[in-house]
Image 1: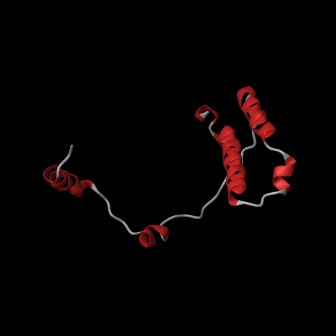
Image 2: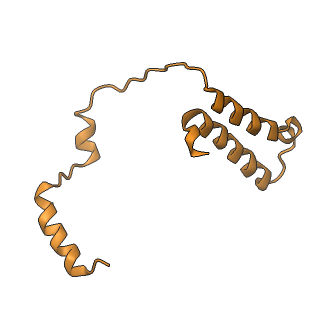
Length: 91
């Protein structure tokens, strides 16, 4: 476990190499932001996982969201679908 003495020593050693900049200073130096959308098809594995998750979703659940627990469950499912598209190896 690192104690206070070691932390102070690390700060002393690392401080000359650290760059501390404020967001306001950096923002003015950045160029304009741009995005490139690249459409691609899902792999077989992604399609299978996506379909299984989609089968858990029922249309009536979308129409009858009364309580926050159902809404949270639905949002969780949406996040799962997003993970399948972006990072299928997380499953």
